[in-house]
Image 1 (cartoon, rainbow, N blue to C red):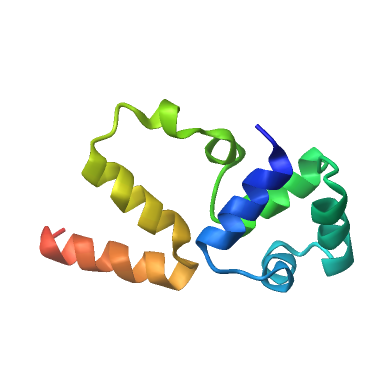
Image 2: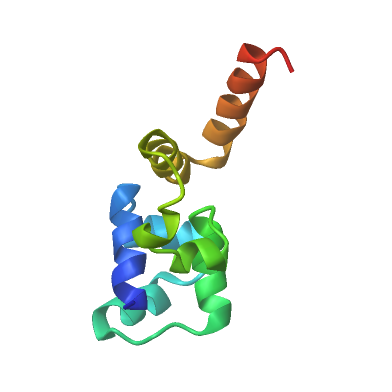
Length: 103
């Protein structure tokens, strides 16, 4: 798996600019731009900050579609949408789901 390609893929899924990813991750825009334009692999620290900005663990960052085979198509679709949400959207979605289930 190409790490830079994965970062770009996740950024595009969320319709984020490089600036937005830099802001959300706390990594300088110049560092992020150099990483993407030069194709260098990020350090573990940088990768962890980027993953957190996307709302993912490092394990989820490295997870491929093949590894999610145990999920139904509906569950995969829900997770795809979930991973694109921002924190407030996730909170509202969880509250809504809990309300539906009377939890």
